[in-house]
Image: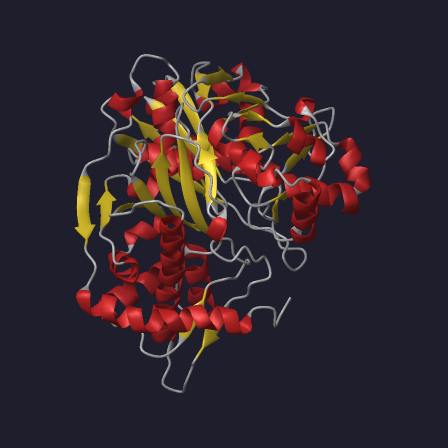
Length: 482
């Protein structure tokens, strides 16, 4: 039995996977995000630990006793700051926080080789700009910083006492030489830090330590090894069997991602496309990211008066009625690909008296689909061939939304078993691999296909007409609000 933990933004997911790679049990514990100022997004790291314990203890006790290893996945980029005593200094600054835009510009000007070292543009979501901002705006807190950990690695710290991280998650900090799979002294120095502030680096398939006895007793487990794991998207790829060049997925979680595996470091920052290490050795990936995907739809569910997010998905699926009027920009937390604009704003455009909560809901599904299609275009412009994508994340439960997205992208979408728990399932696979008993290629296979959604020719034609309005709307409103 293998335990996979995914420290997400909206909750912690825990899954138990057996030797046949079947999910035996799963549980979730919720999390909330604090937004104390415009563009800010924070969480209390202690809440991650509370939710982790809550999720694990919901799992079947007998199955927990059979766990042989634990793997970790989690939201990327979050700056978790510890002092010399290992205590948290301030709330963690999250991946969808936009306060460090000016810091990104300053870092780029100060380090012309930044793009070549990191393989990425400097963006407010990344970890390094957050520390650059902290040094200028909270100097007393900056002076206290003895260690910077990513969210899942703070949970690891409490589980085992090890300051460790994996290549895929750390590649998203902007402190790594991504091609060399090592920390960059140049990038660390740019933010006033050095290697002593960083966790030790491991491949995602390696063990970083073992569970503390006190935690093992609390969780009814042995002192099992803990795999380095991966950032949520890389772990999701492992869970979907996407480790070879040309394989990819679209993730429908709080954020939205189009992910393509690669066998070499091939950065291309045009179009705000990311290039990161994968969670398996000698492998990299390219990735487009929108900051609000399912979260942008959930927002509309709340303001339009749906009973729940699930109710919105059910009603739009029952109606099967594409949008004809209003257009929705889902940029509630700014945007990355293709705009790299932390000040981008969400909007409904073209509302009339004929619009209803249902038509607004459909516009929301389509707006996110158009934003994801922008990401596909950005990846293709960077030289990536995309013939189809698997689907992971909580949003994969809506087949109607899948039809909308497939048609907006004009690509077939493959839904596999365990797709809704992809990162946690991938973390469990990485846990198994850290025991060095199995080959990566034998474990990281694609789960069985549940169904395939093909583009709808009528929707493809309709969206070819409507998507340019979406694009023009962003350009027309850009900079009006900041």
